[in-house]
Length: 392
Image 1 (tube, rainbow, N blue to C red):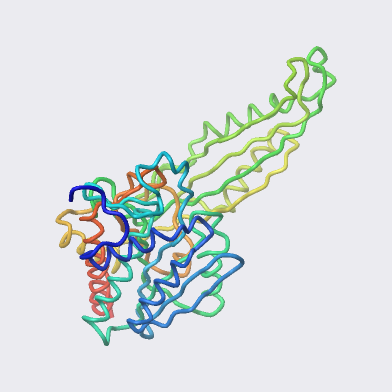
Image 2: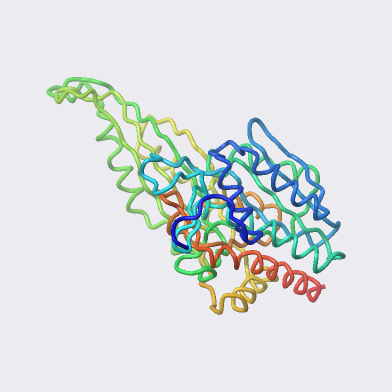
């Protein structure tokens, strides 16, 4: 190739052509920009029943083929983060461009490459197994990179209310580190954030006895929270962490004791804890130190862990067969929408391309990884069918 290839090109493979078409739709969260309609058209042609489970301004595509158990779900999102300054990109972030064996564009790795691979994998599975066991399903949302309120969280609530079962869930998030398949996520930590207002009494620094400094009042409690060893870890999980991300107080004058303080903190926690237990521990610590404080909590999701079972064995074996490596099975990283599916009783893993460029300028996915993904996803599903049948 003498220069960069922009947009669709003659001879593109099915997964590359679809990935390019998705990248070309500027679906900055919570916009979908027609991505789900494109996917639905392809899946409908393969015999899937496609429904929109939209909430608010968020689009959620639910596509199924077959009936009964096992229900094997491929989970992903069509929204992307903003591209940042376009002039900083080597090519327009919404003009898919191939350079030196890498497909560039916002969402190439996170996660339109995997979404395209989902579709091609489903087409391959239906062609090879027209009478496949159970239910094949795809769930896509346009609210993963945003608040994640009206996306998979709401869909999961709908599933719970309607009795929709999910047995196995494969999330296509970019989980690999150096090469495709070197990491298999088998769980994620929970995330719990809090914004706290600590009230004091404003006054003159020369007369501290007539004031109450909220900075001084908070300091011992904050030192205790930061120094605490919350646990020693859990299975594949690291120890629970507590981090203060913002703190602010004062009027800007050096002779005024402030009347209040604001700080923001986050817990990333393993299954030793629930968010309710952490809320109780945190608020008890503030109360024990006599603080006059208000806490405003945001619960992003509980931790989940996929124990050794049908899905982990299937994913590991498929990676070994397709990629020639044994994956590191861990729970590192942030959160994903699988945190809303796991409480439904599903075994959940995350498997996708390398994550080195996600959310960055010139985001990209290596073509060799993109081309390998449909076959990898399809083989995981086939091995799940076999493992589920063997389990009886």
